[in-house]
Image 1 (spheres, helix red, strand yellow):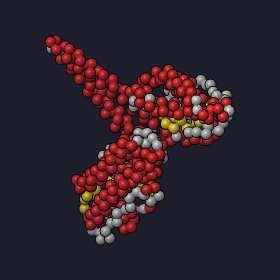
Image 2 (cartoon, one colour):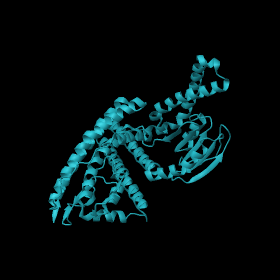
Image 3 (cartoon, one colour):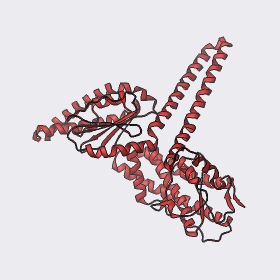
Image 4 (cartoon, helix red, strand yellow):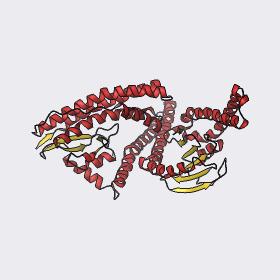
Length: 462
């Protein structure tokens, strides 16, 4: 049997990773340089990203073509030289930049999307040539393998098929992943350590669930817990042991009590921080698992479409898994309710006046909710969510009072600016009132964006 040695495969994977990492890092630097706040900045980012995706994508395609030819030779198969796949189109790059900017204001998310396009060029090269030549392929995991990659790897060696391709590309490509396709033309060829995917079949079919989605979600939850929470618990235990050692050392070295006191304080703070991070990871997993988020969004989407033009406020409450807890219609400017007190629910309501969060909204969110969504009539969907990974989330209790001041200042400033404008004399009172609200909203939106990190929340307008 001919074997693709692990060290040879690793050299190939490391070379691909180097290209992806360079592309991602350069894109991240550019995002931090120009920002994402206006259309001009986004258009500049698209042009830059297209150059990055082309340059490094060509490198990934060339590497994959070389590996394809080497694997064909190992199989004893004579085929035409592999043809490198095209790199991402300008439209694909623009879609990635605009899409990730709407999804998240974290620049890493956008940078990762360009790294993904670079990786896609390499995977496309392997796929397209395998389809051309009738090869077998297998998805070979490397590093920390996600649940979906485990599922793909469990398929073992298969005849290359268009079923694995959607819109001209591999169906599952994500950033920060070293898994990719290998090909062969003979069952006597194997990648060292892969063994036709047996280990991954055992993992996949041993997972709880009767459908692929259920098994993948089970694996995802299990992996998340192991990879993050267990590492943090290990650090917590090590820090606790160090604190105990410091106490013992201090008892035997009274001359240096101040040193030990300072070290114990330092390690105790570190332990508290680690405990916070562990709880934050648990909360994040419970509320931000992609499958859970998708369920919630699928539940709320019809309600958003239904209430966005209502003249009266309508409230919808769902739990973290998307189960509807309450639907209630209120008045023109408010809707009252008695919700759970465990911060485990998400609320959606509309603002017929088209405004952003009110003071009362922020008070309710900070007191009881994980996430609040407000659909402004004729405007965007505003979202505010607890940022479990930000230690300042503990300061949310202070935020309502500060937002109340900001809200008052915004309306006073907007009123003064609108009333002093030349057009004020010609505008009916009703239009003046609307103009004040529009200007105050602009101020409040800036305030909400600027103070998100300070108070430990995530704010977005979709």
